Image (cartoon, rainbow, N blue to C red):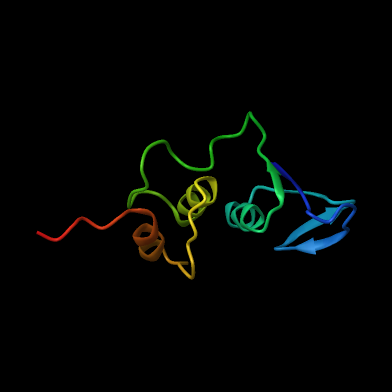
Length: 98
C-alpha cells in the first residue's frame, strides 16, 4: 500500500476514490497513484511491495495499470491515452519507416 500526501496540507476528503485525513491517504490502485503523481501529490511506495511495473521496456504483456505506472515513474505525458494500445503507442516510439 502506498501512502499519498496531498499538496494541500491538512486536507480531509476524497480524491480519485482515496480517502484523505489530515493530508494523508493510502491506496494500491495503480491508476490512482499515477493520477496523484501527475497532480503533484507526494507518493511513497512501501519498499516491501512489488514494483508497480516489470523491469525493461513496456510491451504487449504489460497491463494498463503497469503501463500507466511506468509512464508516471518516467514523467511521460500520456495525454488522452487510456486503452492499452494507446498507452503503448505513447510509451514505445514507432519504428522509422524504410
